[in-house]
Length: 199
Image (cartoon, rainbow, N blue to C red):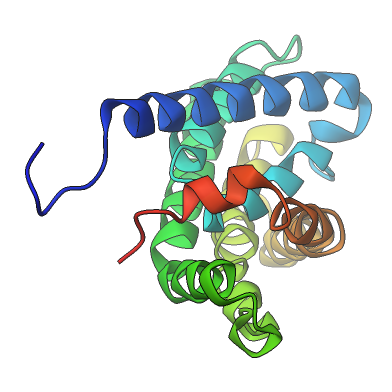
């Protein structure tokens, strides 16, 4: 293995497994709460998993695939725009969360090595990257949903309300559900493994 790239085949396999597990959990969680997961006003509990994209390199692909499958298998499908648009928004948001979370992961790695409370990542290092899925989904999904669901050209207030609704539901899912999940996972060996090669 090249000296500049300490990742092993095991690490790559672990990243694939992370993505597959997150995709499966996203899909199941979306369908278990399908009554509130689809429609003009929606609350996807599965979007809490978006918070894990700050830590796990397999999360962006896993969340994209999970969202794609959930939208594709939705019995009341909203069509190709929602299937692809929502999935791409989720995937891009997760990728941006991972990229913005680099300093968080470096701080977490330092904390694991020192076990000094002062080295633990500051809360702001978590909060800023986690804004990505909230903002991107509100902008993308919030804009196209009224056009798809109403069937006619919606008024500006309807579009703005849709964006606000998605923003609020995403913020609750990511910050009220996902952030505590992330904080709990930080105490596990899986988190230590995820930041092992962070530079």
